[in-house]
Length: 164
View 1 (cartoon, rainbow, N blue to C red):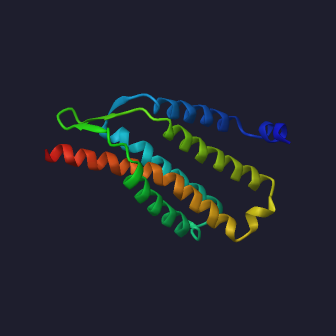
View 2 (cartoon, one colour):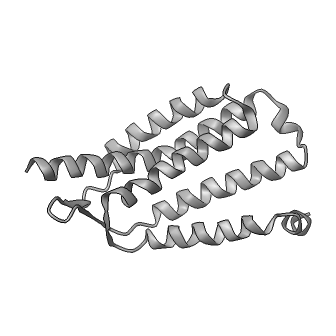
């Protein structure tokens, strides 16, 4: 069955996977980066999750995603933010220590989206249940909350550096 699923997977999905794997692996290295690109990745993942839910289930489960996103963002920012992030206002660059967490969250979002697409293609009964879109939306919100908290952390670090 796995071989059949993989053989019916479009080539672009494998290309996307490799690209996301590279992006995630780059996050494991300490790096410096400009303000806009540093904020694009977190915002991309929130948009990617929103699009995935809206395109498959409409607007109804977006409330579940929004609540989970808000809660996850608040918890992640409060308890797990990277306090070593620095911003140099003169060069307008961030210094961000490497972490494996973005890679794992990126892969979790990708594989969740992939599994959802496979279930949809196989017309799995689970997708038709009323709780599935709500639970899936909440899961995407929880994962995306990590990236939203990361973006908020970058913005707060930038504000503090500019105020100093």
